[in-house]
Image (cartoon, rainbow, N blue to C red; front, side):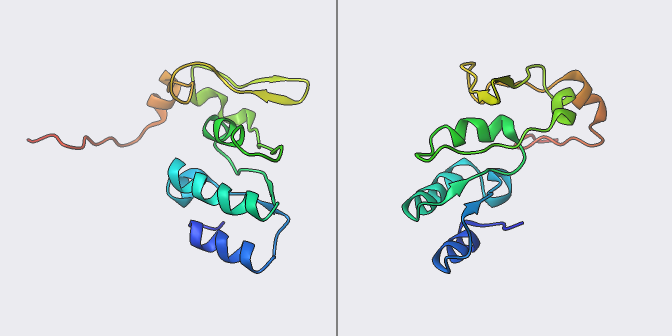
Length: 120
């Protein structure tokens, strides 16, 4: 459960892993994830992003060594669209952005909301 590029970098520098399993939201987002994959690919490491396959399928597709991406069917109710899997491979969506929109079910499960940049 490493939470930064720096933690992953130390793991790579110590030659302590054959695979890295970063989680983009946990390590600081897409830009930080891409920084880490540059470090990992330079070291010849395998990539198996953790969780959030709706984000990671796109990011993993940029990796020069064929990656693994976790898939969790139990997250399907959160999105209107679903990951397409064919012959054991995730198909990267060609829909705009990350290719998913939040479902009404997710909104029903939301217990608290807030707005940023609004004034009372």
